[in-house]
Length: 310
Image 1 (cartoon, rainbow, N blue to C red):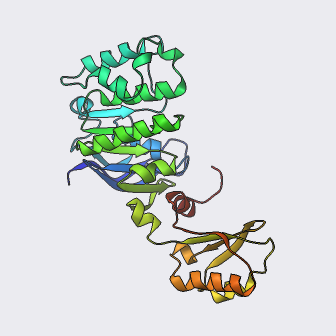
Image 2: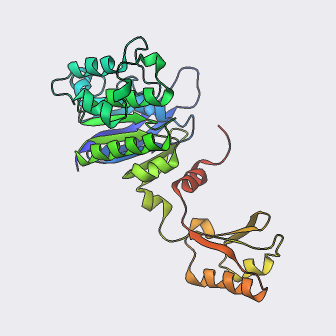
């Protein structure tokens, strides 16, 4: 597939900071695919994307966007790349429809602004001043501005932040439509369910370095890694633990709620499930709400980057 973004050994250092913000990072995003760039606050995501957008010069390494240097070839890239910033960068003294029509007029073959406003539920707000739009409405207008020029590649920063469920799903559908049209999408988000729903490929960075990459299915694994059930509070779990494969954890998460976790997040096999139910039966415990579930992308993310606040 065509490479839309190629980041190769990217390093960015800030003056006065002993540790690089980005440290030898390498990754690719392909055309016609949604690539999610994930990481905790301070991991280097914003710096990396700024280099891709031509807003920051690397200290070392290289970045190529649609085969071009985002700084040296900025004029050639500008009409081909859409950028959605989280704060939107929208003029607050203009009307929403005017903003979108103005940006459309800067492109040779733009989308119909009225259609985009309709898709994003902004038709009734086209004559509203940007400053009077709600946060979610401004977020949707910022997305429309990024897409109105029919870009070949689009960078989306937290595209559904602050949106209600209906608006969030409308945005997700629009992003999926971009993929179907062959547009490359680089998505940064703190919403793991958003990345899991949308991304074809996930890149996780921490401390400016790559820590994992792959499809959501690759990262979360197949099969069920967790078994949960309810029962009387305070059950003695020692015998259950010894009957399960080494490394399997059994915890009472809250009073009367139990969780069995496969070793290192690996799937539980049929024998492990049978051991749990046999243990319950031997004690006359009915395992209420017995449920099997696989690890989510959020589980993987926390395992990779830690649970401490940044």
